[in-house]
Image (cartoon, rainbow, N blue to C red):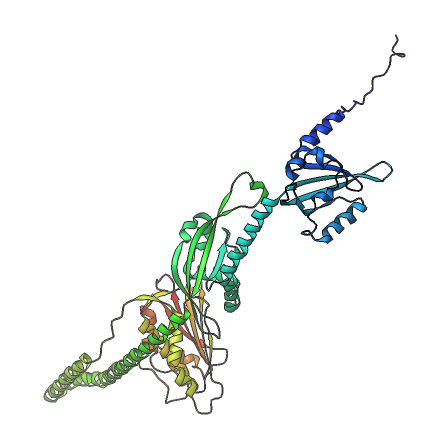
Length: 510
């Protein structure tokens, strides 16, 4: 046979065909309950799984209508209506129906029915597939009920809860936490509290979550125009399982931080009132002692000046009249002895232990103590505290005297007859590892040429030109220096005086 008459081999391979019996066996042995009905829902075929689920053998169910399984009284009619509407439109229908087994037991069936359409486009049969999901439904309901119960308990708890993932994002909270969010008016209360109690919490949560665990630490939250709040915070680490599909077979555990936040403001306010009353009494006593100390020091300072002049005169007089000079020298020596005795009776500064001190707390104490003077002078106070302020190591009484002296100076500066604008502004802030306290008044201010003298001992201009400098700034400067800080004066925007005090958070001198 020549190449021209040789038959050509087809380049297209024939698809292997499965015998029809394989299809039947696959359907019959499938673990899913499968049935085939005519268009009136009369059962023509049911596999073995169908018999196991319903309790009907294939021989006794063939020829029966699918409605034999329906528990119509317990199933809403709208479900059947929806099902027949979809099937009539030759659309598959999926849903859950309540069915009844041969023994009368109810079960929940997850059902899919597909219309079988012939080549002419007519529906000839229905293919039904269903499984018993009663136990799964029961477990889902149990989980849902437990979730609702837990959420109800958590939401009704008087404690705020917040769960943070390892990035610091709040992924779960309760109603009390939402109230806290509204009340504090911050972007995220959990972050604000952690910043105050554990400044390096964010890095620790990512690398070593156990370092973020603590119990019953208190944070003071100062709100502009409102009373401070004290919150007791506890933090614990919990395991969170990833719900990503890619981690379905590889169990990935993440660490979350659970914060429990309780409000202890009522207790702390009562303690604050008691402490403020004690502080006011101690401060008043210390101010009286300081007044005596300053008065005696000023007297000695003033007396020493003419005595120094007299001592110079004695030196000159010794060359002209030794006898008179000697008598005057004895008088000067006696005077110096008396001055030394006077210096010895000057009250010493009270020794005070250094403790962790919140400057917002000190400033509020000063405002409470000065309330009557502020009201009497008709001064409007604008208090703008940092919402949280890290503590410094300091002496509370000395710091209280420092800021009270600055407030008293501001009051005296504005308490001038005929002076209309009387506003006092106090603010606290954290800036570059420093706590910055600013006190501004709307008084007449201090001339720039006199500001450098304001911190000299015994300098005052109260009864002079009307440009107030005040006393106590030398002592204030000493208290600030003892705490490693700095104090400065400048003109305020209103034309008055602004005092700026800075303390480093690490305690090192600025």
